[in-house]
Length: 202
Image 1 (cartoon, helix red, strand yellow):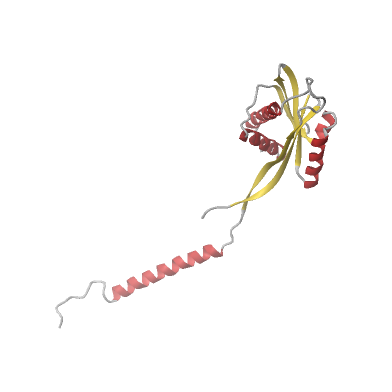
Image 2: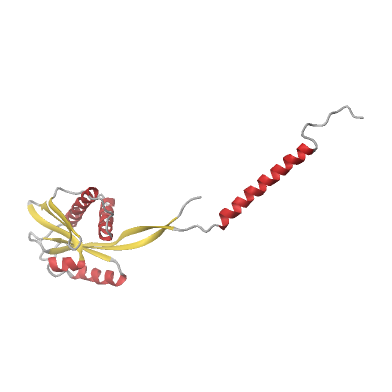
């Protein structure tokens, strides 16, 4: 007879331990299979992008008071949209698609390093867009950034280059916003609206 004693886990205890390990392994595999079989519901976010922006420095006649440099036109546009941001922080409503599109224009201009200037008498309308008075080269200017239909009524006939962009954008189903200053159209922004799937890392 051997003098060596058997380990305490030998026999029935060892069998029970193995059974527990086997059950735990099967349970883990079962949960993994369930996770793989459950369909993942995709999530989407709205993305507003400025596809085209175009400015006309002299929509009426070059060399007179109506001529405004492109850099100043961008500054005026961003100034109008800073007013919109301040307005949205004061109301307890979700921004409309129009407001989201206008904020996309602001983001696009800020990415260029454009900075706003002082403004007064800012106001916003779902039909007209956003408007304010700004001082440019010592002159008080009435600036307005709004949708095509409203701006066609609020300004003189669009310059040809702006009209061409408007026609093409409407055929693509995109939104168009016109920058008007003192009744003349100086700029156009084409904004697309898409849904983009959010990729979540597991």
